[in-house]
Length: 240
Ligand code: IPE
Ligand code: IPE
Ligand code: MG
Image 1 (cartoon, helix red, strand yellow):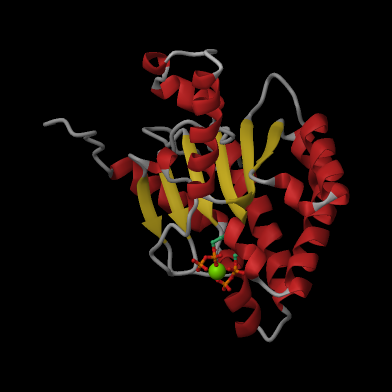
Image 2 (cartoon, rainbow, N blue to C red):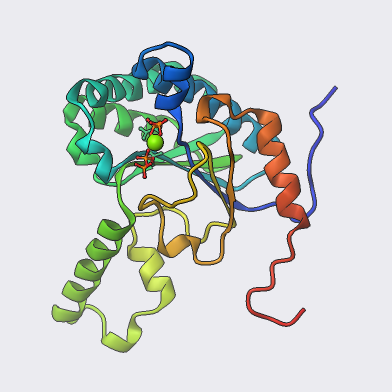
């Protein structure tokens, strides 16, 4: 039987702060790197379910600007995991018509990872997509806004655009973030914070903090979030 679909008022653009891999590993007497591996499996399930539910885009926080402060061994394990995950998943993503984009300071990761990321983006670059999967790597919301300010300022300085031509659309067009506005933001792991993920794009997002570690976050947990989202009256400031 086909999976049940949730149709009404679904979020178009979903963001996820995939937190809790480390604590999951400790709880299960495993290495931190194994927690991250399980995290990739969880993401695979949520991608599949996002396709199934006709979500337009899924934007996930995989590595923050601040995560460089972690032990070198953990960072290296994550780099390897990115490469392995792409190798293992690229065909399935293609079959599902999932278009993958990476954003953030990708150059920080070095040639092997950059090449693999370019490969994934190339391979999945199809016109008729079922889902846009945007992966934030070495990403920080504050740094992102700062870069945007610099980029647009320099265009004003070189007279490419005029000051009064700077609109929300220009901000979006010049931004490295592939998604304009997040409708639903989910954070697993139990903490109630944003940790420098998308700042501008979550201006009107519904935010759900889930008390489960990311590797334990299942398809059903995701469906529950979507059902809860459907019940929310989004007023956007209006009297409705
Ligand atoms: C999120 O899980 C993944 C990354 C930040 C790379 P964590 O590794 O932060 O897991 P916890 O929060 O320590 O449990
Ligand atoms: C946020 O989680 C980053 C990712 C999930 C990639 P962190 O574990 O880095 O955030 P803090 O340290 O709890 O704020
Ligand atoms: Mg964490």
